[in-house]
Image 1 (tube, rainbow, N blue to C red):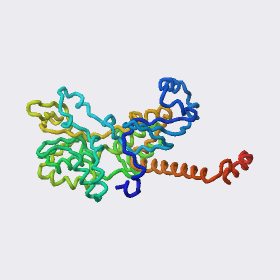
Image 2: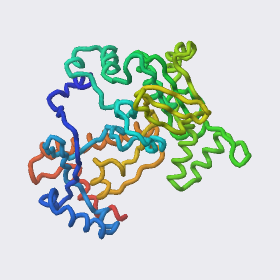
Image 3: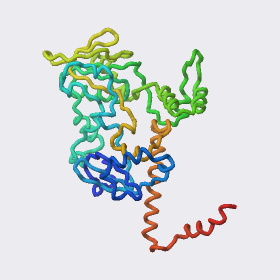
Image 4: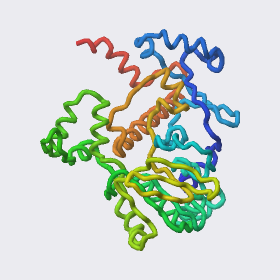
Length: 367
């Protein structure tokens, strides 16, 4: 839809990115080879030497073997890789081998897209329908368990019902929290949070002052997570599921977790022991347990982070922080494009009026 709207067909390249390699000034001929020597040099470099580094361009290596060269690369992928998924510890404790399609994480749904031909011709409503149909959550008549209390879990429950699930068990470790997205800034998020600490009830403003007095970014991030109170479902999504909950087709189990899981070969079904003492038997389990947004674990950014170990503040984890980052990115891209156009329009060796003015004022800057 957006590709057609902004006429991006001619610049669109289909492929899967495997690696992003920053090429530094003076290292043009030493990018793909001498990998071990570069790593040894990187370890011995001081912080002052790192700060002087400047990227000339990036090499974007695709899975298909194609290498693209770009001066600027913007990642807008989100946690789309399996290694970024938050997998509960009980999954690793399953002793039996089981069919992969019977236990999956919602990160896999991010890769599903409708066919390109359908996208070009369909309306926005039809495209949403195509996306839901392309995401096979379950088969008709299956018993499904969805683990997680966020909006993604509500979407999986909804799709499972549309695809004919006979019954859905919705499992969450806390209560079902209904609220809209955190679209505001830190003041909006943290300032409205009232809680009890060491037996003393703190209002939102007191918690906000504590937030700004805290110097540790890690502790600030923990405070934001605490203010969020975990995953939540929008009221609109809940209203859609409410009729199914009322007639018993969806069973919401709050303050409940999985203790133990085993796969039965004879019945080809799951047997799950829950923390409330109940046992669930069913066909498919979906994990809507979120993802780890850690750039250090992203293989695409490994080379970049090694050369430029930058950090972001806690404000970046909510939607307002993402919006602020997008504004910085677009501003920088626009500025660089304008600089390139200015260089092309000027004859070589000719200085712009701005550069001449700066040159003339250099002696006065010390006053």
